[in-house]
Figure 1: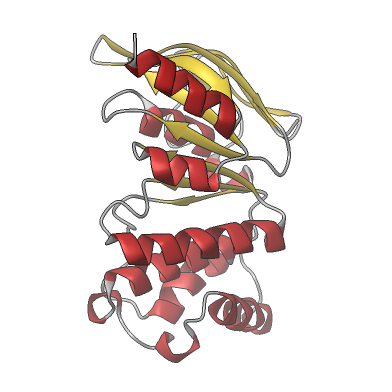
Figure 2: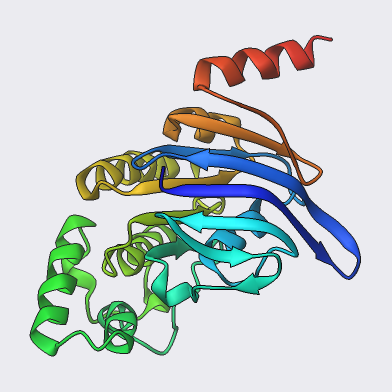
Length: 235
């Protein structure tokens, strides 16, 4: 098991948004958290990343307690977790190369090693020609590849993705889903992917977690969740 979420609660301004969630995630799984906007999906991701902490409950990553009852035990930069945000959060004043290099510099990775890693990952996401281009000069799909590359260049064991394809057209979304699956397998990363789109969930997941109103409604395989949704809609 690489992640254990144990009876976690989280409130904002006395509004309870995560209500006693527990889930175990195995190494190498592709977990898709499926649910409507405002159900707590992003909050759950941000707690795993370490940007916020549970008010109650415990988070364990790779055998280490990272947060416990409102306390951060291990900071985000030491959790080996990468995240691709919905708005991508690329630095507009930096070239694609500099966007990738920023996190490596912060980790004090030597210059030659930084260059090697960045060159390798640009090739993997097929963006070699755009190293010196700024995000504002790239298409939506190209920006998405740079955001993915920026997360992967840090060599995380866990990759969190928060509705990263929601602003793209259907054809481009399909292409990038295949790329995500390929890279996840190649880098042997545990993927936790948030979406409200059922088709996207079914195409990416080995296991789906259905959330609503801050709680887990159902967890299962693609087949089990497909049947669950069908039955719920025909009651």
